Length: 316
Image (cartoon, rainbow, N blue to C red; front, side, top):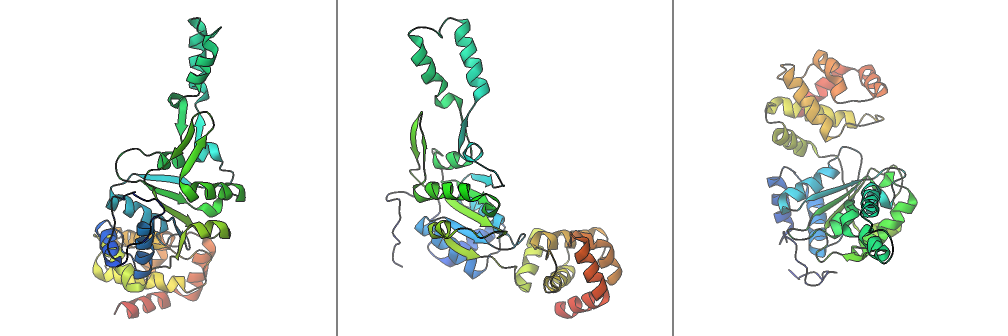
């Protein structure tokens, strides 16, 4: 296999997989069952040292990819949760003004805040001692040890201005602080960007990243996920719950259930003492898998008996 060209010559990651199969095995060993498409995207992101943009509906396991990568590589997981109105102070750095003020008052009390000490005092106020490092700066200036996993979660919730700012960070992994200079990553973080596509992410950001659309898992893989993540659930029940969830996703619901809801439902049924699903048990546990009243009403209107029948037939 031809060695890919890294944009950071001489940099070394803690994990440099030699194949897509190695990525699948590494993620599986750390609690994430990936399909071939996602494993390929992760492989290329690691080898090319490029950010990976994962889009898909909520609950398909995008965030879990970053968590599994952190467990696999041994790198620290640094999470930036995006939201409307997020800015540089929350994402990159800010100054600890309360500590600066305390330092200034202390200097005044001991007579250092006058005369020739003024410039020195200002330098002290804007030193790393009073710098509050937010996730992006932590990821860029991570120090020794394995490269961290930088999770920029739900970037579609941030506004256009913040997304534009991210372009600068993701292009060369450097942060300039006027009072201190430029911090630049010797080894870039492994960057995973997620989006639920509540709005379109700009093309400029997509060009900085490798891209993968994360689908809901296929039936057999979802059964395997339930078996892995909820070992107390019987195989028969796991298959029936996965089949019922698959059917729910094809009903045009406002919020189709994700993997987390499948796990919640399987565990709820197990706690109820169920070894297989039936209409009565599904009815009383529907809130574990569907979180909108309108979706529950639609499912009940379509008939719980037919849902159970389809699940049992699929499981068999």
